[in-house]
Image 1 (tube, one colour):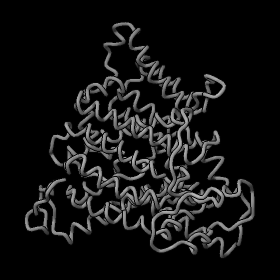
Image 2 (image 1 turned 30 degrees about the horizontal axis):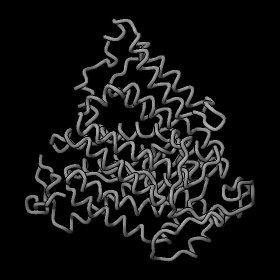
Image 3 (image 1 turned 45 degrees about the horizontal axis):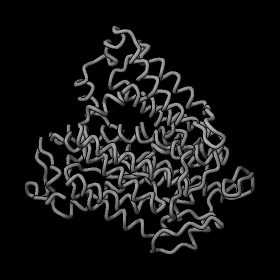
Image 4 (image 1 turned 135 degrees about the vertical axis):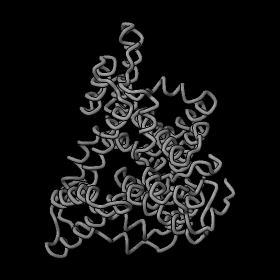
Length: 471
């Protein structure tokens, strides 16, 4: 961990200057910046656990612990917050669709975290060039895209039917807020739209009464209020997240269990995490003017082990957050001291079961409106990777494997291997893209192989990638 020195007078940042990772402003300003980082990560960090059927209070608690752990592993050189990853949402949805338990969900995520840590270790010793050869942008973009678009049926069959009109209103509010609001408020669009939907649902309950729709808790169409705070009233103000109680529908601290079938479903998320972490490290390097390439492997190891620790207790997978990189870009403060404060604040919030119960009571219609946008955004991040690296789809070497993999995943196609094991949706599409791309590259004519898969120099694409929001 860096030992922070005071930047300037500890109060002001002169034009053209930045507060480096090993520097800090005075503690008053540093604590304020740490709180701002917590607010920035807050919306996505607790929305994604709810979507995956995990405990949001536990996710907030471990996001704090994992952020502190990350800073230790990278020796305080990479300022970053570890919040809940969206990369496993598709895999988790597939596990749930096949009858998988919450313990099998967290067990599969734990294995994926361990795989990411091993990959990070290999990159640390072998260099990032090996990774670029195995997972070029055309492959990485395809995997990220198919993870997002595979989730469309989840919105249509699980969240949207719970309250279609609230879902529509929240969807519109999120889109409008993300465009109309500027700066910090713009980055808070998800959180603000969730508050809007929560309030709208409460008002509709008071004005119109109960709604008759699909209730995921009952697994059937029932008559119920949109906002149910029964669990909030019973929750304590202070304490650790509860232990899972399947009989009462409580998801909390629990031991993971493991199934090869379900592990395969979430492993493609590792590719998305590699792309996220690499993009974030490059973005921070560009903004701070420091060479962080030697730390790339450490960042992946830290994120992988953080996911292992969180899921071992029943928590959510982690990843570095672009929301917080945006805060750094706006404030020009890259101090890891602010992230230490953010981690401690998150731990404090995670020690309030009542806070967790309020989050868990988010109405299904609200999640319906948010997931419509979020799932689509995950998919389009794949297109963003292609655009920023100038992937040429005029080359059949890029076009054909990606086309096949996307349809296999989006259509949730299944390939039955044995009576008890099948490759479906995301896992099948990912394997198809990777295997077929490298097979085609091995047998393609020389002119097709030598034709650059990117339409622009890599340096230009990398530079642009560093200047843009990488998540």
